[in-house]
Image (cartoon, rainbow, N blue to C red; front, top):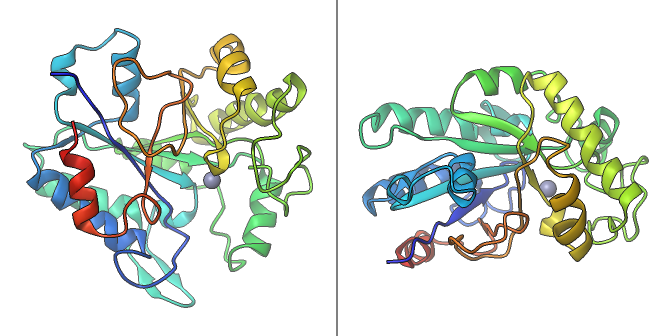
Length: 273
Ligand SMILES: [Zn+2]
């Protein structure tokens, strides 16, 4: 039987409603129990990449599922007081509780957290898109790494956000325009360097901002220069399983709130393959 591996993506800071469909904290807590009940096993994303590179056996990947968090806000790491939605538990504490509860059945619980590297872009996003509460600080990255349950990975220099004054590709609020060597270098290489400096570990994975993959990045830049930046794979939001033939520079993920809004829909995703 061919292996199919779903990778799930959550945004802790984008809360549309205080229920499963709109709150990643509520959804993740429920989804972890569902993953366990479906007989699936959470593995680090780097295991999936090892497997695609022929460095890990099929046997390690049976019933595997990957977990990732995007944008790297404090809500990925610890409880916070949300001005609109009250106390939110934070995604890492939810993972930690699950890992303790199922330490024998789920020995490899892990999430990859894709962060924006630029301190200026993080400050601008915090001021203009969040609540000015310093949720995009980087001081928690070393502790997240040291937890053993989370790795800090590359989500570009400035996400090419409209609010980021350093962003230069057009259109903004999209990553499609990062399609030549200078722009790709600018977005990816200093990001890996700074994330290594601030987290204590070199990122191995990249996630395309907005899920926007383009042919230049996936077919030229990353295959040729990704390894120089220490990268081994890149993730999109294509809403499919990863299989043995998946392109390492275009690995699909399912996004909470987009590809599933109810536990039953996730159950259907987990049952494919
Ligand atoms: Zn993002």
